[in-house]
Length: 243
Image (tube, rainbow, N blue to C red):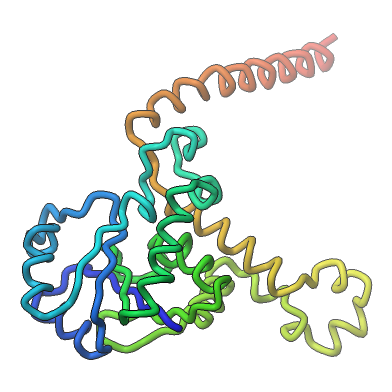
């Protein structure tokens, strides 16, 4: 069983549909929290659904279940969406179940806006859970070529410079000269991948602008307190030098 993903980016409707037909997609699962595009109206939900119907491709909206901007405030920490908290919600689990059942009957593509899946929650939040269920994931790129999610994970490790800690990337000379030190730095592929996912999630996860100002206001007293302590330390040091 496999599932595809695609980012509509700035594609024309014709090119977008061509990518879907190229890979025999029969159903599109829209995982945008808000299924609209300000600059590309053909990707608004109503227009897109109509175009897909003409192309004999089913459309389902899963933005409530698998979107990156949940309404549940418990999924946010200091104003930023937390993917681990989203994944723990009943809605997310329901979305995964619907995908799994749908994949038994349809050739499904998850759709969001970002061109590069590595910068989108569809790859960083949703796809790891699909893989855990034994579903193979392929990302349709802007050119129509495919990138396996396992290859994206290798790219993710490299992006965050974690691939250097893989055992196979340690040379024999390094291992011979610095056995103890290298052993402490060498980590399993699974651990490194989990860290890479978390780093990328922190980088791309949605920040609610309504709470962003509140977070900044909360941080100001802490910054000021730290500055006051620093200045006091410097003053004490100065007084000791002149007495």
